[in-house]
Image (cartoon, rainbow, N blue to C red):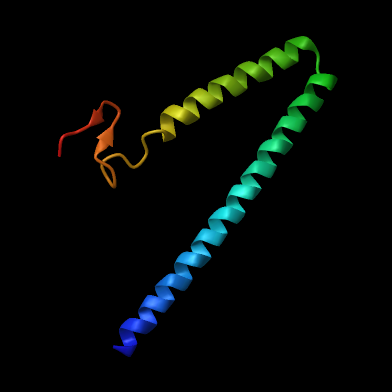
Amino acid sequence: MICRLYFALLRGSLEATLLAKEKELNGLKLKLMDKKAEMKVEWRKILAPEQVGTLDRIHHRWQRHHFHRHHWRGVGKTSDEGPAGKTGR
């Protein structure tokens, strides 16, 4: 009985720690996104129009590749949904 209580308290503590770390990570992600936006504005002030266009094309290609590569990660492992919707399992 005491052992079960101990593990329940431990699990609750771990869940609280995990939630706190996720919130911290989300805050850091927001700061990083803000910094990237600031850098993009600064680049546009310094670079020639052709260079800005090149960077925009590279960024667009990277975003498209990143989305397609990671969007469906984990399908079939923890979810019954895939690109076409529910699989009917």
